[in-house]
Amino acid sequence: MSDYNPNYLDFEKPLLEIDNKIKAIKTSASASQKDINKIESLNKELEKNISKIFSSLSDWQISQIARHPLRPYTLDYISNMFTNFIEIHGDRMFGDDKAIICGLANIENESVMLIGHQKGRDSKEKVFRNFGMPKPEGYRKALRAMKLAEKFNIPILTFIDTPGAYPGIDAESRNQSIAIADNLYEMSKIKCPIISVVIGEGGSGGALAIGVADRLAMLQYSIYSVISPEGCASILWKDAAKANIAAEALSITSEKLLGHKLIDRIIPEPLGAAHRDYNAMYSSLKSNIIEMVNEVKAVPLSELLDSRASKISSYGQFESN
Image 1 (cartoon, one colour):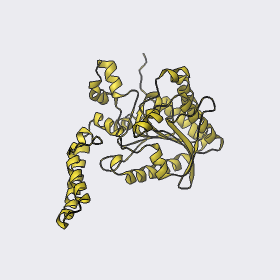
Image 2 (cartoon, one colour):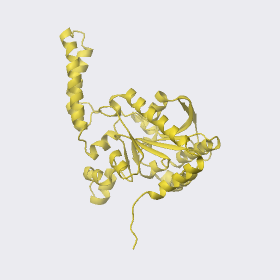
Image 3 (cartoon, helix red, strand yellow):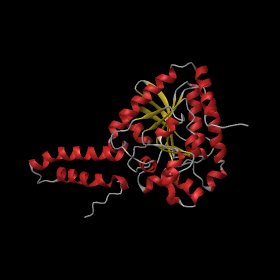
């Protein structure tokens, strides 16, 4: 029987052998006390190896972690961090886009309007969720939810996790670019606090359409970019295999984006990233969200809107002659 496990990335393979040894002891009916005692030393060895690998990740490796198939998705966070979630369906124009989740929920004693991209895990769910790539009706549904939050002065919380907006003919025929542009414009001036968190991959306009915010945070091993590394490599070098070079050049990691002042904070992930310890990830994200909600709620609305406008206009650098 092969030890191959598709859920281990190439650079994580050294961890697979240790993980398999631990699982073998735990599941063996004939394991001796000596074997059981060995688990502690194996766990220490595992932690040591994880620390070593994750201390020197390349930008391309971080991109792979951001897309890890076992990484928590929006619905996982909703189920484990929020209460009283009531989902909102449909854009009242065309239909209900399953690639975007919207709804009211409570985090501690705070009501929020939750909006997030949702990917699928197995083949059936991936197709159902359109691989987390929204169509225009998804963005219009999100805007409908935002307007509802504005009406009742409820903070908006968005979870970003998409390869990009869906580029198919049906989406283009229903004005994909206008739906995204409308969201960018409306979010820039909507009269309630907005917090956005990149939980996986934030790709292009598909991410930006729910990413204009008073506080923009990224999970430690998430990425945020104008184009995917593969897409960039295909355009610049006509070779998607050069994605690792493109990833370095694009400045897509949380550390680089914080350095460029394009995000406001990095939310720490557990040792070995979010997919290795769900509960630790939920706890870290929850405490950071509560902190950010308290921050934005303490700012008068007029000040918050002025600050949001200044923040948007400060993006990018240019020279004029």
